Length: 137
Image 1 (spheres, one colour):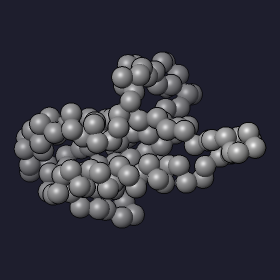
Image 2 (cartoon, helix red, strand yellow; image 1 turned 120 degrees about the vertical axis):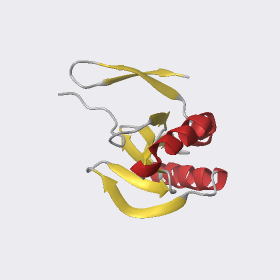
Image 3 (spheres, helix red, strand yellow; image 1 turned 90 degrees about the vertical axis):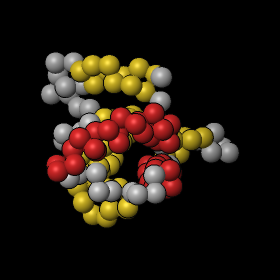
Image 4 (cartoon, one colour; image 1 turned 180 degrees about the vertical axis):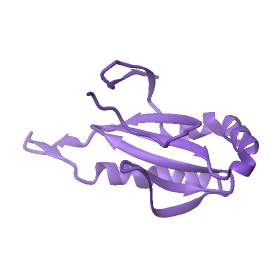
């Protein structure tokens, strides 16, 4: 069975961004940047909470084993997951009593969310073995 990057169960929308975790040092050696994902995560958290002031930081909550819930307001919550240099930032309804309002909030703000996250790929399909197929945007 193939693998792909995970995202929140029941996600309304998912944005994808790739990142590099290696660089060449001054001697021409390829070095793995152990902090690359942590830096990307911190930037996404900071930028989203700055763009949407109603979002509050969430600590130590997970959806399954792979998607970390990191921001939430009264309507929605955001999750982030990484696999092999591909990151998903997903959003879902937080309070079912406000599901219609939450969906409207996401639809109204989705373009800005993708921009803030730095979405640079779009999922176009999934092979029968579970591997995702993406294209640059």
